Image 1 (cartoon, rainbow, N blue to C red):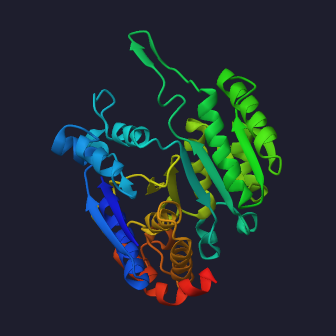
Image 2 (image 1 turned 45 degrees about the horizontal axis):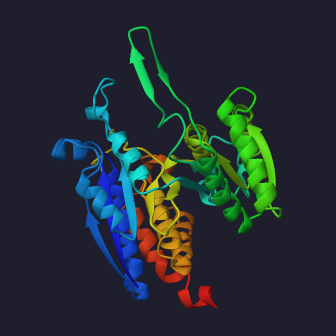
Image 3 (image 1 turned 45 degrees about the vertical axis):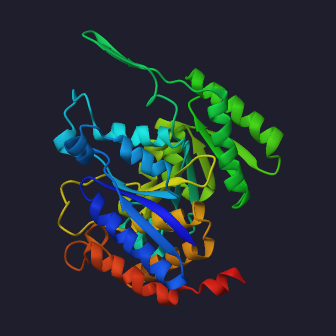
Length: 362
């Protein structure tokens, strides 16, 4: 197949990890007879410097015309002044909204070889396989904001339609897993959470009778996520709660550098990015962990290009590379760590033996 993929390297380590992911995607294309065309565009801080806009119109237009978008990271100290009128993160929020991406998928499945890197006891992590579905375009991040000399406010607002569609996406995904959805809210305090809970119960009751729904308050969920992570299958929650809980969940895997994400709307086009930030302290040193970006490329193959076999192949190749000890410094320490390019090369080498597409399709 032919696919047009927009690459948004962004800031900090973004260019390094996206280059690794593109190399893996190109290797997949070469191995399995596909043609992937890659086009780079600016977003975030570098876009502010070059264009005065964290999401230039040309970038958004290119993304709207692409089959999928691969993103690195945005932000950094250069653009982080609290009173700055334009910030890199505004570009990412505008891109999600401009593409109609309302569901952020963050799978967490700790690899046996990396359990020792997690601060959580290994016996709690064995067998963990959960998926967080975070609502992406509503809530406090997008609500009206005020500021004066005496205080500030941020409005948290959700519509019934916004809640319905993300709960439907979570339940649909749960049907392909263990058919259990945990909805996270703060319904004992917040009116938006009470609406969230009522809507989730109605959607599941009317449309997904085969899915089990449970509710958790966000504060107790933060505790349970670390103390009994095996208890969860699909977790669905609102924007800010999801942002916080998914960063917490990265500790289950041992490093934020290991985890991917997919941001999806109603069509096939999606935005794929590792969950980590721009890490400006290590940018340009060639030591960033590319695994999260590579696994994001696997999600791109699965959700936007509908190449499930190739996606599984990449995931198996990553597993094989980790089994062989292809660790960057965040996992291994400086003594025996590999660089970004070396880890990507290890994954590409593992593609040859990780799986065969014909076998997966049989």
